[in-house]
Structure formats: C-alpha cells, structure tokens
Length: 339
Image 1 (cartoon, rainbow, N blue to C red):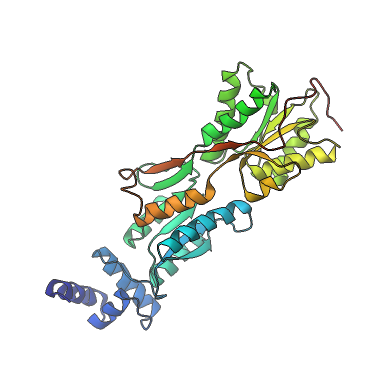
Image 2: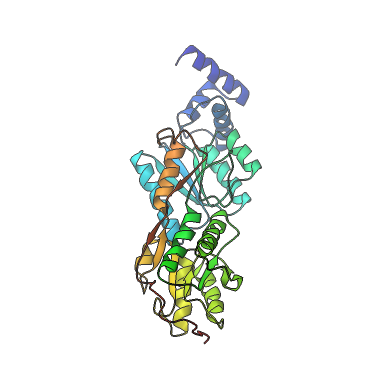
C-alpha cells in the first residue's frame, strides 16, 4: 500500500468514524462490517474514486426490470447474462416498478456494492440520478420510455424504421386499408406509430384515424382493439400491431369470428420474441434485437465497447422484417367482418 493510498484511506476512516482496517475490508469486499457502516464507508470510497468490491465476493452488475413474466423480458435477461458471463461478472435481476422500489434497490446495492445498473424501460428522475451519482453507480437505460437526453446513456432500436418496414411490407402485398394498434405513452410506441403514418403517406394512401388504435402492449389490448376494427363496416384488410403480444391478441380476435390470418386479415407484430414462430399462423414481425440490445448496454456500462463509438449517449440497433405466414396479398376487398 503506497503512502498516498494509506493517507487517503486514513482520511476516509476519520471521516466515517471507523478504523483503517474497516475501510480496507469494505474496499476489498469483506463481509464482517455492519451494513449501515459498510454503506457509509463505500459511499466515501467511491467519492474518492475507489472501485468498491462487492460484498458478495464476486463482481456483479444489476439489471432492473419492470416484470419477469414475458418472452420480451426473458430475451433481455438472456442478453445481459450472456454478455456478463463473458466478462466473468454475475447479474442480479430486480423488479423495479416505482420510485420507492428504486430507492430500496439503491440502498441494497450501495451496501453490497455493484459494478453498475442496467435499467429497462424506466427513466430515473433527477433525484434518483443524483443518488446514483453520489453512490458512484454507473447507469445505462435499455429501451428508454422517453428521450433520455445527454445526462443518461441508453440503448434502443430503430422503432420508427420498424413501424415503416411493417407498413411498407403490407403495402407491397397490395393492402391499402391498413389498421394499426399502438401505444403512445412511451417513446418507442410513438416512434412505431409515426413510422406507420410515414409509410401510409409515402404511398399516397392517407390515414383514416378510425383505424388508428391505441392500447396496452398486451394480448388483451390487441384483442380489444382488433374487435373494434373488425366491427367496422369497412374493416381493414391488414393490421400492424405495436408488439408481438398485441399481434397475438389480434389473432385471437380473428379466431373468435371464425376468421384467420392471412386469408381474411394480414397481421404484423413487432419484437420477434421466440414464440412468434410458434404461433398459428407463424407471425410476420419486426425483429427487435432484444438480447443484443441488453448485451450492448452491458458493454457500454462496463466500457467493453470500443470507445462506445466515441461515447454516444444513445445507441440504436437496427430492426429487420421477418416474413412468416400471417401476411399475404389481400384476397377480399370491401368485406364486412362484423360478427
């Protein structure tokens, strides 16, 4: 231990009101220091530029996610865990849905130590960012719900292009009356709807607001809005869904009426979760590289990306169209689908 390092640890010990031995234990991941004392020492160490070892005895990164019970979440977890394993780092997954739960996680992470946090679909507020900065915990947001700005690093996907790709595919098949089900409360949802509008206007088809629907990104949301669309006198011959879950709901609504895709209505999803290829019919969808987004965010957090393309604040990975069995040229026009 160099003299300057020793004096710094002595100063931290004095400020924390503990021995240099206690400071050294916290710095090296020792477990025999009281939790409150450990958190106080760890905070001071980080403020002086030290990387505090995890209390678990091995390197960890935290993944904060709103829910665990979806294929979408599974892909993000898989991408994080795979990338972390390559770096010999363990991942602690925590469900966080509110500022209170975020604060609880931050208290735990500060006590045990963490290499940083990946936060899915949650944009920390200014107070939360201040606490993260004070604890010297780096943050990267995956699929941010709002445009994050320069203060937050984030990884997303080309949602606007994806919405346009889905709609252009249907237009290319000959569909003209194309409905859409989306979600406007999050940044990605608004971008997908904007891509739909851009493709429709580009093709000179115009936009009928009666067939522009909004609902939760769930099968229930897709089913409810598809029922409404199919009850119209001039129902659409194709529907673009906001995600695969909504698309599955559309398929359910079709089945309720004795209809099916693509014979009666073509359907396009968004995400390409693994079960999309198992649906009946197999779902045409926009592939959002979820696992790659999480892996990229992890590497951005850990500094493994080559200068992260000169440290941008936001990276977007490309979407791509995956054509399966749920889309085809329209076989009917002017048909009423009301039950």
